[in-house]
Image (cartoon, rainbow, N blue to C red):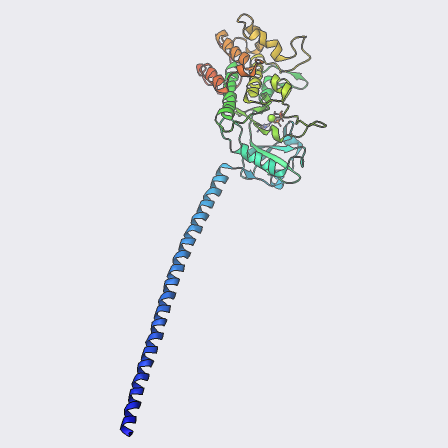
Amino acid sequence: MGAENEDYKKKERIVLAAILVFAFLSVASVLVTLTYYCYLRFKLSKRVKTQKQKIDYEEKASNVANIQVSTERGLQVFTFKQLHSATGGFGKSNVIGRGAFGQVYRGVLQNGRKVAIKLMDQTGKQGEDEFTAEVELLGRLSSQYLLSLIGYCSDTNHKLLVYEFMANGGLQEHLYPISGNRTISSNLSWETRLRIALEAAKGLEYLHEHVSPPVIHRDFKSSNILLDKNFHAKVSDFGLAKLGPEKAGGHVSTRVLGTQGYVAPEYALTGHLTTKSDVYSYGVVLLELLTGRVPVDMKRPSGEGVLVSWALPQLTDRDKVGEIMDPVLEGQYSMKEVVQVAAIAAMCVQPEADYRPLMADVVQSLVPLVKHHRPSRAGMLQSPKA
Ligand SMILES: Nc1ncnc2c1ncn2[C@@H]1O[C@H](COP(=O)(O)OP(=O)(O)OP(=O)(O)O)[C@@H](O)[C@H]1O
Ligand SMILES: [Mg+2]
């Protein structure tokens, strides 16, 4: 009985040991599986993290690239304080002109660059965001025939535009220079006038045909053609009419109405604005260059007050076209050249907008005339041709 009992206990110990070994192995295998599972999770999460970091980095990198692009192509944003000190506190001695926007000041930026700064008279009416968006859009246009907008300041109380400085100012100052109270003769040579006509035409051509959607200048005139120190021309104030101050008491902005004497008839009558309205204004500037007369001068004898009405009938008459020419140009031009330029002007100012040429056509017609002349070093009057 005792031996049997002993045998039974031995078997019991063996079974218990087997159970323990089995249990231990089960726990160990669960632990191994768990550890392996944790290891896999860890590796996976590491990979996801690396990938995420990579994506983040790429995103950041592309953002950095975007920022670089926008600072490269975009505009500098100035504080009012910076522009205040650039213009010597907007001192009177730094005023270089005045227009519909307000005063224009000469200024020097911290980096020594000379600039022209326009200080808008009326603020608050034009929403800050609208002003900024419009200015940034115009700042992206870039052509050697357009005045560069360098930057702006737009806070609740101040709206300023910062442009490259043009040493010889507006074309009108050279066509009808004023000394004291009297108008003196212009000293812009025929050759320089032709080149200015071509460069201004290229500026408008860029706005109309090289930009999508096209930009209509809206206020093309001789004071918006600026001349650098070598009398090369650049078109200014393109598309800015939208930002102009409202006309007192009216619902249409004065600048949208354009400037007297330059506005195309269909635009004046219907308010319908197209690139052909700019072509008309360009024709008026061409007439100013030919005749040296202002677009509207009611002090002139009857029938001569409005430049277009007075000049148009003579523009296409070979025998009479010489009579409209600026007397100071006498001897500098050939009649062949005058007839050609007069024909371009006549097409530009014709009342029917559809029949006016494209600016690309105007450029094409002027190129041979300008090439024909040697480039002048200065814009001043030269000795008459033999
Ligand atoms: N970038 C510039 N560099 C040098 N002079 C400038 C510059 N911008 C403007 N001016 C001067 O300031 C004058 C006034 O310019 P502004 O554009 O304000 O008026 P405007 O052309 O006469 O009329 P509008 O406001 O209708 O365009 C110009 O005639 C020119 O003499
Ligand atoms: Mg102007």
